[in-house]
Image 1 (cartoon, rainbow, N blue to C red):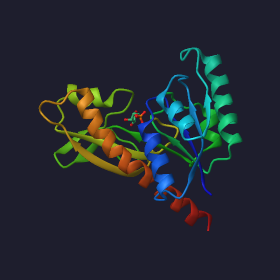
Image 2: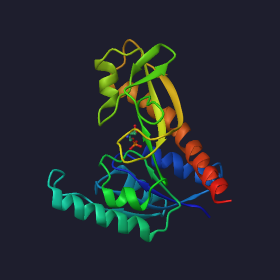
Image 3: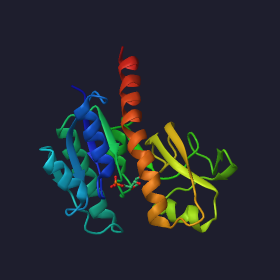
Length: 212
Ligand code: GRF
């Protein structure tokens, strides 16, 4: 059975979408491990409830280089120990370090709550014309503060440049006049929950084809 490692910092609703799809057979894979940098995350609780191995790996100080390098090495070791075929970043809020990126090159995918262009670029074409590509930690808030007509969700491969890898699936979400960050993020997440399991299945299929 194909094995997934899921990295998640937050409430874990995207993890749940993967677990549900794996259980009902629409995603031909099993979640082998869930790793979180937040010991109290909903993602770890969901993993425990599903009887899946879970690892909490908090990073004490994000700005200090040495702990970051150590965390990068530990994360790489822990994930590798579970022999995953694919690593899914489902709401993972830490920038991955060089050791992790090298070890799992071409085998990591991420879900992002905004429309991103394929392989990088500062803007993306939407049904309402060209809009800025919103990267970083607050793309939902940024979509509202910039007064964009639409935003969306993107599942893409992870490369060395943050939020700039090849796109697997992407879907637009309209911004409504009375939206706030919470309401808009909820609608984006509903789309993410549909896209992520499909994108993971597509990435696994591509790997199978490539490996012959
Ligand atoms: C998602 O919107 C994801 O795109 C972003 O963080 C959120 C995580 O939500 N990176 P959840 O923890 O899966 O509920």
